[in-house]
Amino acid sequence: MLERINGPEDLKGLNITQLQALAGEIRDFLVRSISETGGHLASNLGVVELTIALLQIFDLTKDKIIWDVGHQSYIHKLLTGRRDAFPTLRQQGGLSGFPKNAESVYDAFDTGHASTAVSAALGIAAARDINNEGFSVIAVVGDGSMTGGLAYEALNNAGQLGSNLIVILNDNGMSISKSVGALSGYLSNLRTKPVYLKAKKGVKGILSKVPGIGRPISGFLDNSKKWLKKMLVGGGLFQNLGFNYIGPLDGHDLPGLIRVLGRVREMEGPILLHVRTIKGKGYALAETAPDNFHGVSAFNINTGLVEPGNHKRGFSDVFGEALTNLAEANEKLVAVTAAMPHGIGLMPFSKAFPKRFFDVGIAESHAVTFCAGLAKQGLVPVFAVYSTFLQRGYDQLIHDVCLQNLHVVLAIDRAGVVGQDGETHQGLFDISYLTHMPNMRVLCPRNGRELEEMLKLAVTDTSGPIAIRYPKDDPDALGGLTHSPVEIGKAERLLTGATGVAVAALGVMANPAYEACTRLNSEGYGVTLYSVRSAKPIDRDMIKALSRSKSVVTVEDNAIRGGFGERVIFEMGLLGMNNPPSVRAMGFPDAFIPHGRRGEIMTEHGLDAEGIYRAVRTEIERHGNK
Ligand SMILES: Cc1ncc(C[n+]2csc(CCOP(=O)(O)OP(=O)(O)O)c2C)c(N)n1
Image (cartoon, rainbow, N blue to C red; front, top):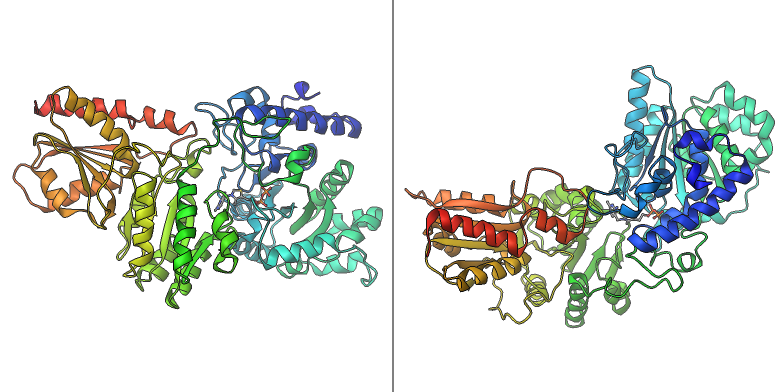
């Protein structure tokens, strides 16, 4: 049946039995397809029925569904004409793993970061009202994403505006790991509570108190009192925010979902439909270990094991082990994550020091200010966070951390190109958004050993905030090459050549740059290479030395705008020289970088050894250095 679905209109004629069979086919398809390409499996297996029901009831030529985070939008993609593209999922030029306007008219809003859907949906609904248009707007939000403050700002505003808006809370009790916090406790109470309405006089009575509920609801109540009565119990939090709470509903009961959504479509005002789902539903291995199947590399369907070669020890592992070791000797050291204990490498720490470990939920802004509070009282908080998600903490870093010069340590993982998650997840802006903050220091290790040293420095140097940024890459690159002890504000000169062309490469970019420059030097050129470990403070001796060259090549895995290269140009400019060197800044252009493998993207932008070799050689040919 799946092969006959080429757009949402093809679903409309199917009866319940056919739709249920389709759900089974979709699960088979997803498991098979994702086992080959990798991707977000468990979240999608949980929303098969919900997606079918949504596409059955709503008219996507006008109605808008906004998938929070968007990692669970695979079925939506599958049923809106993109089935054949699944073998290309998350590959360069292929199907994106997240909703993309540019990919399909059925993708109403681009997402990737958590907790944005209600805000976006409310904005769309408010515009619809001003424009006198008529369509439904549905935000589908997971319980994990409901731990993000932005979601509550939106609920609060929605309750006030009273616009027609449907929020579907997809509650599987899981974020990537188990959902955390008091709100998750609240939801789990709602979820497990037997649902009766004995105490309430009548559903109509309740609804009539909710502003914006009109005739259509009364009509359907007469027909469906029984099930609705059951579902209107509880949800006090959402009711108090001005939402009409309905649920909890079994998210795998397709007829039930279709029936309720059909009614909900006719209701007025903000509605919160609470749907219980099972993450990983239908694939036993994912049901029992949904966290392992949240985002997976290619795996063996029978064993669930990742294909050999797909799991390598990374910087996150080095960080996690090093931090745990440091915490043995320093009882003030505490670790903070915003819902990413596995990905960020904090599992060993959380087991060794459960009392000094905080998972604050998907709440990066809060995490930063929480760390400021911890630091204020003399603890040494290490907030381990992906570069892209720390963007959420920009103001908190300035206002709560840097302004008071608090000793907060940021361990910024997934810096640079992340790869297959695409635009929303690339860590290409951290150098730009951190280095202009007064008091902030930013270190960039070239390999795992430098990361260990930097971490030790960062937790012991109490003079202010300090960030260490590292990518999803091999921490053992150029393992044989020894390095001098790391110093804050100092670069390391790896190669010394004639004064013509000098290369300054930031963090891990020093590895391909080293390969490129040793090749050039073996060809008889004399290129100087700096491994730049400190993006801020920048090494002024290095700047002076660079300024004596004819040409400087900077290499970074950050956006060039506001990045390291721009900084080198600026610092050399400050020296006020008559004949400053020309500068070629290599890095990422002023554009969003789509998904693909990290290596492929680096190559495409000339940021591998070959690309750097060619760029430096061009400079040599232009300026002479033989
Ligand atoms: C701001 C932000 N922080 C962290 C993440 C990483 N992340 C992706 S999905 C996810 C868990 C989402 O849980 P939930 O919303 O319940 O969806 P589920 O996968 O359980 O369906 C997290 C933490 C993110 N996408 N955005």
